[in-house]
Length: 69
Image (cartoon, rainbow, N blue to C red):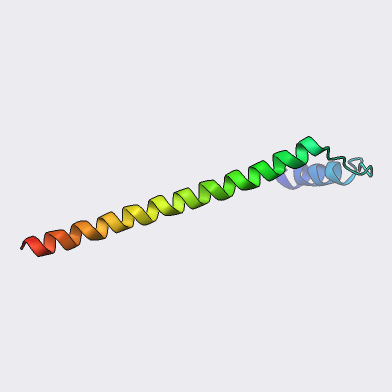
């Protein structure tokens, strides 16, 4: 039963029409893609810096506790 439905899905995908027209990117979509890339890089660097700061504060706390003893 499951095999028949799988064959039906595969046959449906094989016979889908293919659009052979080239895609069009206007200047607005190009600048949007650049904006997404820049925002992603900024978010990654912020997340990395915040994780490093958390790790540094964790190490400083344990060092301070050792000196109190």
